Amino acid sequence: MAEGGEFLKTQKDKEFFVHENHLYTFNSHSKRDPDLHFYVCAERKICKGRIHVKNGEFVKEVTPHTHLADAAKVQAKRAIGYCKEQAASSQDATSKILQDGLGTQSQAVAGALPSLPAMKRMIQRQRNAAQNVPPDPKTAEAFIIPEEYKFVRIFEREEDFLHFDKTEEGRRIVIFTTKKNLELLVRVKFLGVIVFTFAVIATNFASAAVGERGKTFIFYAF
Ligand SMILES: [Zn+2]
Image (cartoon, rainbow, N blue to C red):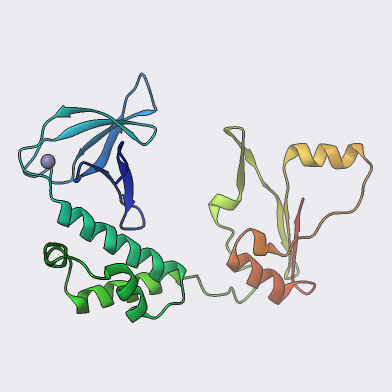
């Protein structure tokens, strides 16, 4: 384990911080120093343990724990995190993921882990969730552009990215661009546009663009 602590991801949105075999979850950050994060003991029902973390490094303990550190529990969380990550990102068989992730663990760690059938179900759930893409839209008009693709963030400033979106006689034209790129385009008197297949932006964009391109759906991005 790293001297200054480490981050441990066990679920999509849940991240633990580990220091000296205690697990912590993020609580808040300092108003004066946004880089200074306050973490509380993961056993917060029974313990008020609290530490300061800065840039991923343990800074100091503010409130001590009322229980002992549990290395086996931390190791079990680490193994679970590995299995979940592999389930979402690899094509490996469930048995291989379990073998690689659990390996030969001590009895204490094995005791802190869920049962084997539960681990298998967890891997399957993770796998399904990772492949859970929305179905392809039936018509160009039915395709909903996710909010997060309508804007871009340029140097901390949010700017419109969806510039044009219109459907006429069943034909939909969508243009993504920034104001700056439009200005540049005018300045160089360059009339072409670069058409991306939207694989670079999102898988569902790609299927919509490939399936409908040239017929009812035209995407431009520059
Ligand atoms: Zn504690």
